[in-house]
Every structure is written in C-alpha cells, then in structure tokens.
Amino acid sequence: VSTQSTGVPSAGSLIIRALKEPHRDRKKVKNIQHRGNITIDDIIEIARTMRPRSGARYLSGTCKEILGTAQSVGCTVDGQKPHDVSDAINAGDIEIPEE
Image (cartoon, rainbow, N blue to C red; front, side):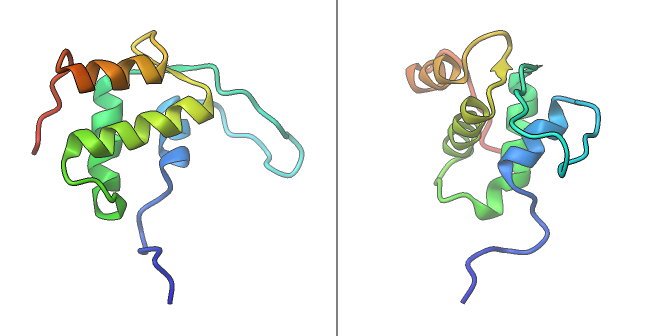
C-alpha cells in the first residue's frame, strides 16, 4: 500500500520552483547548488500546498518541515539560514497563521 498521495509535488521541488531557477537538463547537470533566497511567505504558501501530506498538527509545524527541506536544498529564507527561521517560529518571533 502506497502512502504517497497523488497530485502534491514534493517539498524540494516546490522550494526549487519558488527559487525561480532556470530549467536544467536533469540527465546532464548534476550536483547543483541552489544558492537562492525565498521569503517566509513562499514557505507558508508551500506549507499550505503540502498540508495534506504533512504529519504536523498545525501549519507552523508544516512550515518547519518545509524549512528543513530548504536547509537541505541549500537556499536561504529572507536572507537567513532556514534553521534560524525555524528557531524564530519556535520562539514566537515569527507568526504563522493557522489558516
């Protein structure tokens, strides 16, 4: 039995799409570094898209999942490391709307 729901792309591909990088040939170009910057609004938007596949109870938890993916993709969020943004959400410095 597959746990993968249909129609929702992976968090990594949504983040890379939000970076608005030029399209590349996946067969030829390997080990690419995604050194772009996305906004917290992009993260919230991706989290809303990913909500059906998330194990998190609240949207803020889903946002932190997306931030973890952003960390592994290698991009920054509002000029900061994704882990720092995640810490700011935990501390209550960044508000994530529930809807």
